[in-house]
Amino acid sequence: MVEGSMTQGAGQEPVVRTATLRDFRVPPYAQTPVPPRAQVAPPSPVPPRAPEPDPSAQGASVPPRVPAPAGPPHPGNAVVGDGQPEGYTPTERDLPVIRRGDTVQVRTVPEPAPVSEDGLGPLFVVGDVHGYLDELLAALGEQGLIDADGNWAAGNARLWFLGDFTDRGPDGIGVIDLVMRLSAEAAAAGGYCKALMGNHELLLLGAKRFADTPVNSGAGTATFQAAWLLNGGQKTDMERLQDVHLQWMSRLDAIVEEDGHLLMHSDTTAYLDYGSTIEDVNDTITAILTRNDADECWDLFRKLTKRFAFRDEGGADAVRELMATYGGQRVVHGHSPIPYLLGEVGAEEGEDSSGPVVNGPHVYADGLAIAMDGGVTMAGKLLVVQLPLHD
Image (cartoon, rainbow, N blue to C red):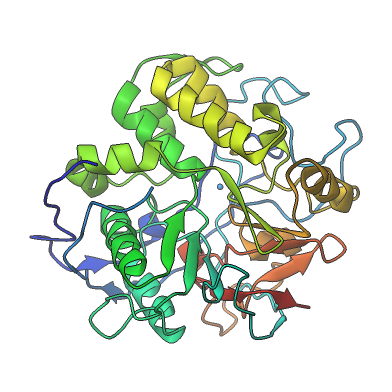
């Protein structure tokens, strides 16, 4: 384990949320590009928070809903070269920014979670954070997982982050530092705090390792650096990125099973390309990152950026395919924001509303899938939820 000291937001001025920070972009591997929507987002202050980290612990927006296209067995898993337009590149924007005023209602009814068979406490999951440290601290506090000072307060509870800690928001490194520190504190209290690999972890690793090295994108020249910048990469995150962060990210698992929940970042069946067991998938992805080949890492990033495999016709079958291979009774994922999974963006400009309304996770695909990305980057909600859920 690497020893060292890290700072969390140290020496930075208060950060103001701006339209730039909220710009929600991903490489266009999932859907055909559509014109971006206008965004109106009055700024609000988001001051940084800086608890002392402990490095000793563990280890993109969407067009309105459309009928599933004919062809691929799992809609939303299109890759470059699968009938995409000419000039389709990894740096082209294909997911519009949701406007303030767009609303989505999500209803779920949580019930108390049982203690696990091994004596550990209740299970919690966290959706995409994307650098919004203050929102994360508030959400963890609301669930009683941390105290007023940001320290672990949940005893033997279990906490899983579903990936995407950085980019778009103001303090991605602060988020990573917090998760690493909570991992040590939770372990000392008899519980655990762990994290999964998101596509933005792969993107940040690639931008740091390979910078402007050209990669074989399947649609012309691409680089990790360009993709990272156009997907919300923050200069302050890159400046504060340390070896301990890189090592922690590169060792994250991609998929796990907990209490019958198959946890993963992306709503895609692309995990099947990396192994027939959970252990195989995690070992294969770790090996790819260890080999440090730019094209191989790009292909991994490209595949784990796919989305919407569970959303439309055939979505429940895609979930069942994953569970038949890896186990579990429900898939729990982040990656695709709930407002876009529902395809409901109905408010007109000028209508008085504070932003998309996300009250909780979205249960769909015949009740087999739970979406956890509440759209914090678009003024939605950063979700921290206790499992199981009952819709």
